[in-house]
Image (cartoon, rainbow, N blue to C red; front, top):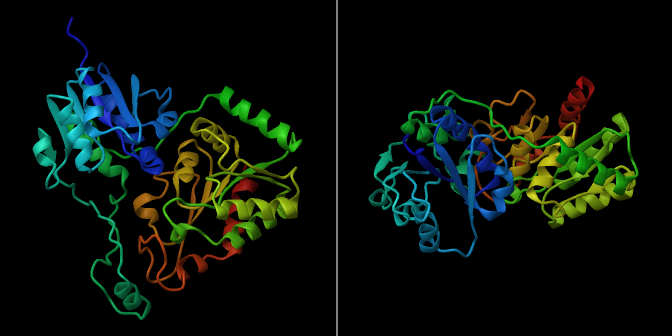
Length: 368
């Protein structure tokens, strides 16, 4: 009997991007049902992949580990195939240092020497172009610029990863990203929430007002607060605050606790592991969020999401093929600019008013 083919997937390093790779991982498993598939990921993302049905094993690395150290750790596993999902030079070097005979990744100047099979960009691929201040000013003034064409149907980033696994015989038909979380984990989160709030029977919605990438992705904090209060008045819902324990999230949580009381607001920001975050997002009936990692997790778990999009593009990085998502796109001519900070007056996010968001959330809640 032949030994099982051993495949290593070098995973991406950002939470939202990791969720967007799940269709490719699933398609690779379907193409290689007998293979032993291992995913290599940063230790901060390990909880996302715990017990994932498409994987046989998960290996992790720490922030301070060098490519040499990772390569030597991988070498001991004697993988047959290595697939680099990131476009970085380092991910290709790690596979080379591991001595993996077949090493696959996107063609990039400087990294091709470390790969045995380089994949050319697919048709319909779109690179995110960060607009200059001059380009933004031209658009605001009504002048045309280069690189301002509509995104093609297959521009979304999940197609980037599907195109890579096609090199190993996987299909490329799009799937919605999907994550699984055990019911016992959701039950544990519910019990923890009830102990803190004393509210055992209420309707709980999630709120994620931060965004690690930068302030340009954040709908204004005062509008999150206003929307949360309006929805509480309409539905008597409670709010669970998710995200990092950053100043914006702290401000929103503090204001809502004052206005609604601690039985209707529980602040979990900075207080959950990644599996606990997944359980909490699964527990919620709806999540109001910026375009950030928890948005992708919630949608992949099947929780409806409402998302204001300003500096980023729903066509490129929104919840892909999610039937439950309501994505509210800014009307500003300069959006999406893909910048971390707005160089003018933040008109993209300011163009999305509170009532738009409240109406979208109310429609979902009433349909539950």
